[in-house]
Length: 328
Image (tube, rainbow, N blue to C red; front, side):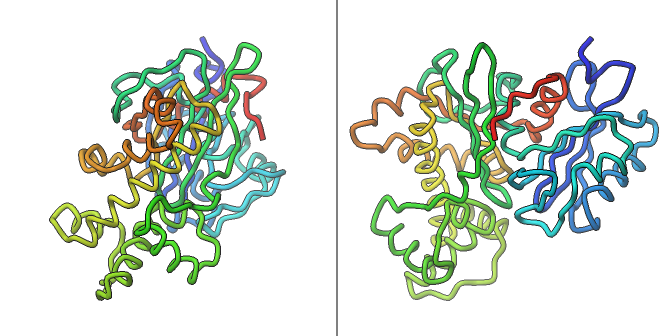
């Protein structure tokens, strides 16, 4: 029996984003048990959210080990979430919760660790390509922000990368995108990939496209834009497709950087909800559109992760490993 499911101590996993805090226990098979999603804004901090989860499911034994994935870079003991005004000391949280072991890693590092554990039903293929066994894997995805990571082979094991590629500079692929990014540079100065490929990024694209067209932009949230786009609103539809295309650019850049011939995986809260809209978008064409390296990228498979919280699987893997394979 693996460590996380053993009788000597229950294990807790959590995926903490800017909007939601998702919790679960780890079963003996390494899969999540008793999952529950809490709204982050309803709690003063991470420890308070954890305690609310434990109180909501009192029948489970008190956890002795935990692993949390957070939307933030992890540099030392002090952690501040990028898109939520929560800050905490890892050691102080460990003591407050009475844990013997607490691991805190970046949320997309946790998703990267999940990749070897995903089953075929957890994935939806987009385009062609065939994975090369043992080659690096890449993962990225838009939600409140945009996360990126990779899984690389090293000395007979997988090592996950703690990366912040969502804050790299977004580059345009055509004149239309150049005009949109010019407007956003006037607003933000630095336009990262996250500024356009995320929930708020979708709003930024819609508002910028309205400015380009000289049209009035309504006060819409990402769900409104997606819904209107599906109903035929031309600006909303273009904003959604532009997000998908820009995601294709970012995904191909990541694939080339890592040599991710094992596959590129799309996670996050936005793309799985788009369903067939994403499959019909320009994502895959943009992913392959790299001039002399089109054939290289065409051979790489891409897939959407439809498991709602793949980070749970990665965190369970982390707790099973006494020497976690995470590269800062």
